[in-house]
Length: 172
Image (tube, rainbow, N blue to C red; front, top):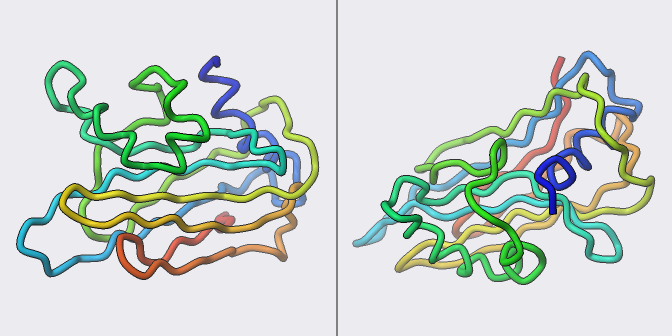
């Protein structure tokens, strides 16, 4: 699949919604500080899925700095993401992949003023999956309808182990 096709879907659908075109859409992902003997930063994947399980990639955080692409070997630990679409991709993907993140709140910002191909209106699920070496795995889901309406935001979900608060909101 072409990178533009993977990434532009969510941005486009949201850019043509009732959310102001001059605003940004922001996804905040909290990674909790865990008190464990051996801590590794989690791999995280974020994607949008429609009712037919068609995937639009948003972000993938993994160990991009390992030599010879060794960090890609453990992407399959993001089981749901890997099964849905991850195994079909070539890494790194410009604008989507990034380094793992430590504990704290991390954001993915979307510029809604860019023109991309629209996703059809309908029901979607925003999925956020995290997996950590010598640790656990967690999958969070935020159901949403496109086109989004500003009164529907923010949308939030709270993790219980590998992820904390996840919030999708419009900012001005």
